[in-house]
Image (tube, rainbow, N blue to C red; front, side):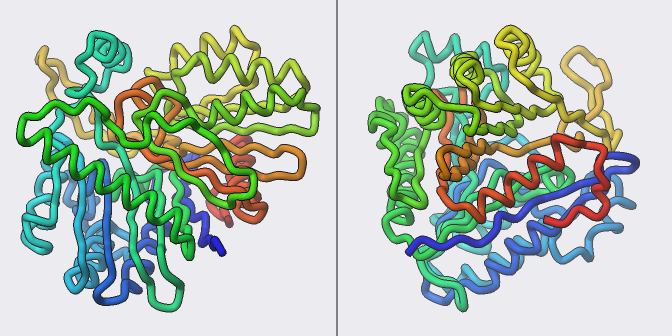
Length: 406
């Protein structure tokens, strides 16, 4: 029977100085410490940075002893995974810290066990849309997945899936993120493992200069949702957004005011998704949308207002003012050093069913059509309630976050 641990959350204070919260990574390190020797271990991450802090030496010294800092988590992973069948996939992210960590992982696990996606992604969503429509999509996607697969954890169980919204780095410890663990579900584990193998095969093909016609082996599968399943997973790139698919099914059944939908999303640029939510709202659903304060969400504000949907923007907070010089010689503050709402989850309460969608997938065109992503669907009341509690706390940002207990 499918079982769950978590969800675990990275929580930060919304007022005053922005401190990191290592509690979720403490749990991740604890899970790594329970890896049974000889286990199958697979990981796919957009970014991995084992450094304990940012450029300022005082900042590094302040947090280096915290048990949940990225260096601790990395060491815990390597300590246990060396005696296992361990392989990792990471994106070719252009960061000095990321590249240093890649070298460290290669030395520790062996170069043959680390697979780096050679693509150089492009951040501008509109530019990526044009590339996709011109047939150049294979060059500009990201490997944006964030999960670990472990065949057995001591004292917990087998077929463990750790699905995160966070990368392993200290930046993410300043941002709102979540992690959910699913275990004792072999079918789900095997689907993730097939997806991981497909990612690896695609990387090897790209390195050989071969053209990949079907970017994801699951992309053509219809987003059919099994009502009896406690957990299901869908992978991108794909044609149909599985979350949107489920919402359209609810729309067809003439929902009443008892249906409640909450969306917490770092980036939301799909107007089609907003259109479905608007129709659901007109049919009596309660809809709330929480977004991060990002430039990419400017268009979202326009179409959310157009559809008269209730939304709130959770403002970013600077926690480090280091600067860099852009291509025009102008000094700018490092963008990644903003404490932001980085969650990616959708909650659907419908006819006594409690559904959580979470994973690496943002509700954007690139996320659906270009990137390698995973989106996990869980139907469990206890898991749902914990996500709902976090959403409510973020929806009312003047709560006392210093004693935020989830």
